[in-house]
Structure formats: C-alpha cells, structure tokens
Image 1 (cartoon, rainbow, N blue to C red):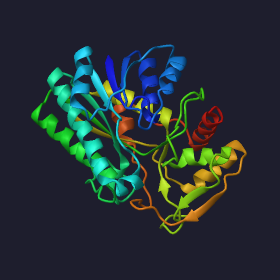
Image 2 (image 1 turned 90 degrees about the vertical axis):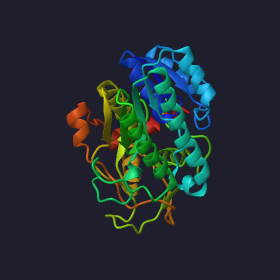
Image 3 (image 1 turned 45 degrees about the vertical axis):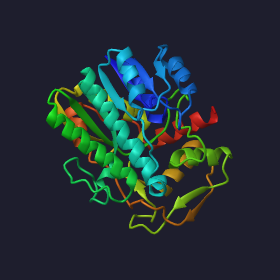
Length: 329
C-alpha cells in the first residue's frame, strides 16, 4: 500500500516509516519540520535502503494537502502531525485546538474526496483523564485535565462521526502511552527542537551534560514513591502497532491501547537508566506540572487479541537504546 504519514519526520513518525517500509509499503511523508529534522528522512533511508517521498507542508493547509492527494494514489493515512506537550497546551490552548483539530478535519476531508478508506489516528492515553487505572478502551473519555487531551478526544469524536456518515471509511484510534527509546541502529530517536518536554530525552541530555539536571515534577502524588507513574513503551514496539492496526482496518472504528500494561514511576525510570547505562543522572524535585495526573497505564488485552500485537521490549531496552541514540548526536 501507499501510505501518507503526516509528521513522518518526527519521533514516532520516523520509526513508523521504517516499520512500514520494512513491511513492504510505500511511504509519503508530510511534515512542516516544526518539531522535527529533515535529516531523519536520510536516516530512514540508511536503515531501510528505501526512499520516502517528502512534502514540507503544514497539514492544516487544505490546498497543500490536496496537492499531495492529487499527485499520488494514496491507500491509507497515518496521522501523527500535531502538537504534543501537555504543559504547553495549558499555556497555548488556541494553538493546540487549531493545529490538532483542524489537521484532522483537513486530512479526513481529503480522504473522503479522494476515496482513501484507511485512516490511523495518533491518539493518546490522555483522553482517559483521571479514570481508574488500568485504562480500558470501553471507558468514557475524561480528557478535561488539559487541552492536549481534549484535542485528541475531539479528533476521535470527529472521526467516529465521519465513519457513521461514510460507512466505507475505516478508522483506527490508537491511544498510546509514553513512547521512549530509539531504533537499535542509533540513527533515529527522540531529538526535540529546544528544551525537551518529554522525560527520556531530558534524561539523556542531562546524562550527556547538555543540561544541568533533570526536573522531576512533584513527589507527592498518591503513588508508591510519590512521583508520577506512566506506561513507557518502546517506540519500535509502538511503530509496529501502527502497522498492525493499518493492516487490520476493514470497516468501522476500532480503538486500541498501545502500551505495555505496566506502570513505571519517574524515579524508577531514572534509576533504570542509571543501571542500564552505568551513569548518574542528577535531578531535583520541583512543583507539579499543570495538567498532569498521578498515574496511568494500559490494559493491553484488546490489541493482543485483535491485532496480534504485544510490546516486546522492556524498560532497560528503552533506556539503552535512548542513550545509544543520544551519544550518536
């Protein structure tokens, strides 16, 4: 199949491009490079020995998106392009609502116009809000803890309504948890522009000496060590989950959690990184971050049963691969 990957030069997008190419698909990447680097596309070629077609476009721009659909017979879309920082979404809600929701509208409209029937949406565990863990796909959505989560929930509702009105359109809503790690080659990984918003690249940059110390946001949560608990999933496992979901799509809307089913606290992750790589990571405890919740991790039974997909790599693998990538930078 010929697959359009929006945000394909980004962290999860680039790993999914590799997984798609290795599975025999053709890949077209649309990315405005606002939080990614064009060099990632060269690295994808180094890993797979295959080319991707690249368009530097913003997928909120209807005419630019239309030109891609005009130029190619696209079989499916995997939509990653979006702003993704919980804290920043609290500070910049307009930017988040516009970018994340409008991009979904523009892409789904183009799919309907050009007869593209497969749409895989990059959603998030944040749509569960403060539900009781583990999160199960049948739970009501409670994303009101931050605008980022709300944009994902809104996009899910939009896509669900589109399928109701257009039964030949099929959508996979992938609610994934906290992607970390990097490709074994060390060529692609999480390399955000500016100060990282996510934990692992912050850890690796502190370990390398680029940053002084890690800030741990809060140690008074109702968790075993007081720090936030998350379900960290290796980005390579996550990428393979997208390919499995794409191949599974036939009709209707399917919702899947992509996680490991295991919660790991911030301090546990720091200590795992130190153990895996034999390096100290200085950190300090600071106030809680706006929009964060205490604990979330996935119930993964549905993806295992229906997609035949299960995360294979553990936290030590994630820490080793993330550090290998960082040292190559």
